[in-house]
Amino acid sequence: MIEFLAPFYPWLKALHVISVIAWMAGLFYLPRLFVYHAESAPGSDKSETFKVMERRLLKAIMNPAMIATWLFGILVAFAGGWWTAPWLHAKLLLVLVMSGFHGWLARCRRDFAEDRNRHTSRTYRIANELPTLLVILIVVLVVVKPF
Ligand code: HEM
Image (cartoon, rainbow, N blue to C red; front, top):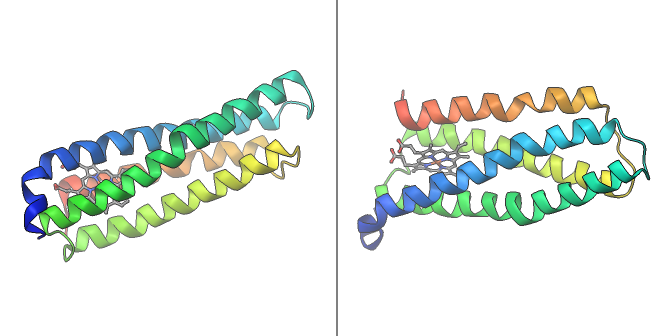
């Protein structure tokens, strides 16, 4: 436990959960935008509008929210002395997968921005399920703490 952080525990956890909500909103919404973007013709008005929406969502919301989630999550772990808890190790593994998914979405966004999308709308529909599965497992780990 880092002593001076302990009094801020509830505040750090509140900021952590707020950041998590913003990040998750983006992880659910961006692949949804890709589903419709993949079905619109490159160069069309619709496609250009999706490009603006995707860029703003990723840069203005998702990237800062992911950084804040990590930052406040790490501070909460120090403040509560959680680093040796097995549930946290399992959670970190799942959060790494989630961060990798974020990275994959960022790459897809770049491809769309250059009119070089490489996946079908069906792929994005399936990809949309991954954050749902991850968030269920993470919340059970952090709330139930089964081990
Ligand atoms: C990025 C790395 C992360 C670290 C180091 C981390 C660490 C922690 C720690 C130590 C707690 C405090 C647990 C407690 O007080 O019982 C916590 C709470 C929480 N975390 Fe994370 N977390 C991270 C990412 C995430 C993600 C990605 C999610 C959701 C998808 C999430 C969801 C939550 C929730 C909902 C709580 C509140 C649980 C409660 O108050 O019972 N965390 N986190």
